[in-house]
Amino acid sequence: MVRNGRDEIIDARSRFVLATTLPTIPEGLLARGLLQAEGIPVLTKGEGEGPYRMGPVELWVPEGLEVQARLLLEAPPASEDAEPVG
Image 1 (spheres, rainbow, N blue to C red):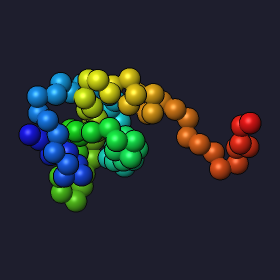
Image 2 (image 1 turned 180 degrees about the horizontal axis):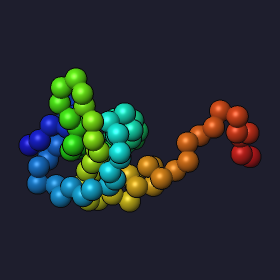
Image 3 (image 1 turned 30 degrees about the horizontal axis):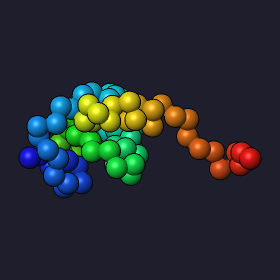
Image 4 (image 1 turned 180 degrees about the vertical axis):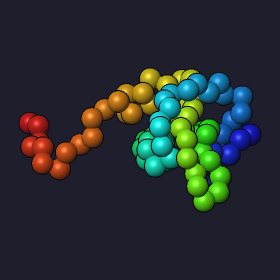
């Protein structure tokens, strides 16, 4: 078993695949939060330690949820000014 960023236990036998790589820590944390809010387990790699954290962040998701994760990450952000459809 492996723990993800929210201290949830993830089955280590699951095959994880790279969903995306983001250039900065804040972008990586936001994307991880988006995926976790949708119930997708996420493992992160590349988060630097210490006060000067920098560098890219890789987000890894279970293989069976890769398509869903990529769709969420590629979706344009909802605009507060957008008119409701329907």
